[in-house]
Amino acid sequence: MAKQQRVVIVGGGVIGLLTAFNLAAQVEHVVLLDRSGVGQESSWAGGGIVSPLYPWRYNTAVTALAHWSQDFYPQLARRLLAETGLDPEVHTTGLYWLDLEDEAQALAWAKRQGRPLSTVDISDVERAVPVLGAGYSRAIYMAGVANVRNPRLVKSLRAALQAMPNVTIEEHCEVEGFIRKGEHILGVKTAQGERRGDQVVLAAGAWSGELLSSLGLELPVEPVKGQMILYKCAPDLLSSMVLAKGRYAIPRRDGHILIGSTLEYEGFDKTPTQSALESLKASAVELIPALADAQPVAHWAGLRPGSPEGIPYIGRVAGFEGLWLNCGHYRNGLVLAPASCHLFADLLLGREPIIDPRPYAPQGRI
Image: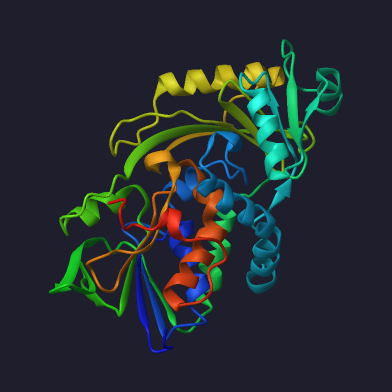
């Protein structure tokens, strides 16, 4: 695709930011629009584990994106640090899954996929993670799993884009609809006026379905609320990520520990609730009893872009020339972002795609 392209991206989460980052050197101009501040929705709210919580339970389409991204994240972080001085903090801690019901399926999946997942004696886990609560009997472990400090990833991506002369970021610029001429999408309508482009990319997370409905298309992406709490502890308190009964603890390098998360279907309401706070605190103490003496320093909620089987929509929208999707990543937007956005750029620019794009194509799915 020719260099003279002007691309308008709707949505400034990690998917929108990284899409812009991957396209900027290859097109004439990128305009990134966000209804609030960039990266303030699910990109900021998530935990940042660079793995699906239970990777063996997902469709192979999700696995393909996850594996590519997991391998790519360290070099992305190094590049962003070098370019911006802001470290996304890709922190490799490994992940322990405790008392899994489907442990056998997990191990069989790992063998098929060639992933380094293995059973660990619970006494070894207790030695490796001495703050872990009692009462667990079985564990499996994957050593290479990292977490990324997602608010810092957002800041570094934003800084990198702001340094590019052909990228414009417009915050607090809500898109209200599309500029359409027959079957061609020529841009978007915003409260601040029209923003025209040769290509329009919808990367608006949980809001993508609402926007696309204005074209008479039904995109099955819905908001799914998730709540988290944060503790501040000594930097060496928790050495690895741990996950049990659907709840996880994630250590940051500076001693912050995130506990998450809930899964709630409440529409676009992202009000933190007392009941979720109590439930998350109980999970925190069950995983790490030492947290009984600590008070959470923060409690928040975000809206995931829920989609069928968690398979994102990546590619051209049939019947609407110039309209593209990169959205619907559900619980795995941060995990899948590097691969999703590289694949998207391959498709828009007409390059050989990094992986088979067919499972993510919007055609036949909306």
